[in-house]
Length: 149
Ligand code: DQA
Image 1: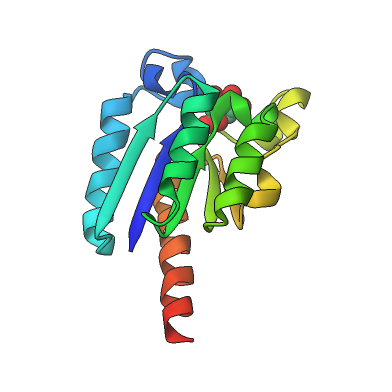
Image 2: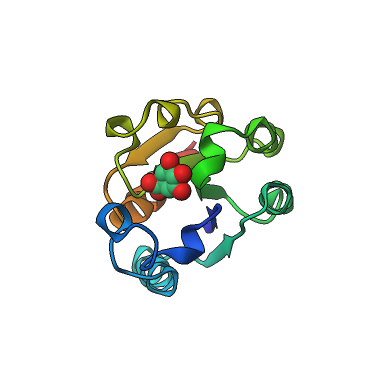
């Protein structure tokens, strides 16, 4: 199984950015955490990409077509604004899980809307880094199920 992990704007600032909400671990720590659990889960290839630019994230989703079996995406602020990311996820049709470090359901009203959610098979929020692992486990179970059919 090949998984792509996408992170949106300001997630490169983890550790510095609002540590009371997002914790003190850095984006480098997150990348290492993802690589470690991917090894553990037997993920054959893990792509990790972060961008502050909506179009770069759209390009990354499109490039995943034919290369990856699933996408774990934390679109960050673009969650609440981006029809382009929704359309890109729908276009490639890969199973995708939406992840948020914080529990967005308990935050501001504007964070209650997710444009990408209709293109995702699951949303995981409020579990910090562990949310990415839970998402990968979900995609691994889906992938194993599909292969059995
Ligand atoms: C976030 C939540 C978003 O509302 C916010 O804009 C982010 C991070 C999270 O991981 O909790 O940048 O996606």
